[in-house]
Structure formats: C-alpha cells, structure tokens
Image (cartoon, rainbow, N blue to C red; front, side, top):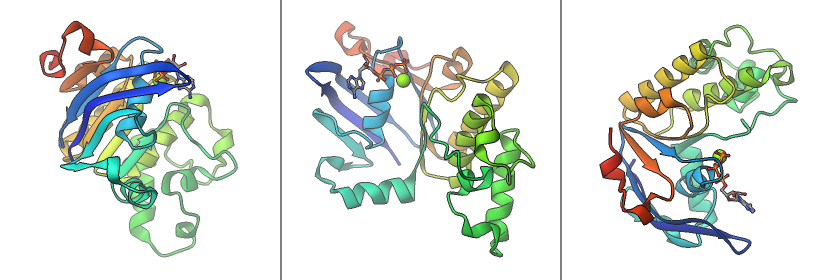
Length: 224
Ligand SMILES: Nc1ncnc2c1ncn2[C@@H]1O[C@H](COP(=O)(O)OP(=O)(O)OP(=O)(O)O)[C@@H](O)[C@H]1O
Ligand SMILES: [Mg+2]
C-alpha cells in the first residue's frame, strides 16, 4: 500500500505542531521521519497511520483520500492492513508476552500451530525466545520495546508504523531491529519510521525532515 501525505498540518491547542508536510511512502521501502525532539515526528506518524486526523491537508491510502473515511473504515484499515510500534510500546503489562504478540488469548489453547510457530518466530527474531508465557510486566524497558516489535512482525501487516523502535536498545539489538524492518520492506511492506537512530536512518531509502518544507528541502532531494 502506498501511504501519502498532501500538505498535512496539525494544530493542537492553538499550537501549530506540523505544517505543510507532503510525502509518499511506497510499498517495499522504509522511510525515515527525522528531526529534533519536538519537531512533530510522532504527530506526523500518527497522522499517516490515521491515529490522528490532521487539521489541514490529506492522508491517502493508495489513491483513496482518507478524509472521507468513517471510524469503521479507519478501524478496518488498522485491523487488516496496519501494525504500529508506538513510542511508549503499548504493552499490556497484565497479560503474557505471547498475548502481547498475538493479541489473542485463545491461540494458546487452540490448535493453531501456524500462529504458535509465527509467535515463536517473532519472539526469536526479537531475542525473546522462550519468554512467551511470562507476564509482560517482568520484562525490562528494552525487552518491552522488542516485544512491541515482535507484535508488529507477527501481524505481517502491509503497512508498519514505527516510532523510535531502537531508543532503549543496545547496539546489537539496534542492528537486529533495523534488519527486521528492512526484511519487512523487502517483503513488500511499506515501513515508516520516526527515528533519531543513525543506523536506522542510513538503512532507510528516503528521509523526510520535519519542517523542511519552509527551507525548500523536498523529500525526493533527501533520498539517500
Ligand atoms: N496532544 C498534544 N497537546 C499539546 N501539545 C502536543 C500534543 N501532541 C504533541 N504536542 C506538541 O507537539 C510537538 C511535537 O510533538 P511530537 O511528539 O510529534 O514530537 P517528536 O518529534 O515525536 O518528538 P520526540 O523526538 O521527542 O519524540 C511538541 O512540542 C509537543 O509538545
Ligand atoms: Mg516522538
């Protein structure tokens, strides 16, 4: 799926958080949203993921302008097409690690071997092998971050939105996470990542600098 922003702006409580952001994220690519803390990366990522409705401009999914989508259509997009790794991880502490990956408790007692093996694969890929039955509350900050990534990998969504996925990780795990999202992109996924991480930025095929429209720097010109 192609995700595009056309002149997207967001005004919150009389503060213009982002202004005139335009961007195209193509399937099979990983795009970085970059800029200093407070420049609006999370806000823009949330607009692109339809988590927040911009106060100006449009977000397109393929050729459809989502401005006309009702809540039900937006939920269908989240359910069927999107995965999110949000900045505070979104982990449900009271549930097991495996529940947090699959977001279903039924599968543990069912015969859905495919789900079990995909869950195990996602945990392996994020360095959490064998931790499925532990309560998520037992995990460290960096482990929770990797669990949120395992959930996104497990879902095999067409579009993956990722906010600072390496912020709490050591160098080896940062590298592993960059590789995981590159693999998703190579599989045809559209990956959008808000990041400060140099390694992650370098792995992206394009960078979009928040607030760059005023200086005339365009996304295409930032392409690596
Ligand atoms: N709901 C809100 N109410 C008020 N201000 C907000 C709200 N959401 C975001 N902002 C403001 O918008 C600006 C951009 O925030 P945002 O979280 O998008 O930045 P960011 O680039 O992701 O920063 P960081 O790198 O620290 O994660 C900040 O100044 C923030 O305080
Ligand atoms: Mg942020």
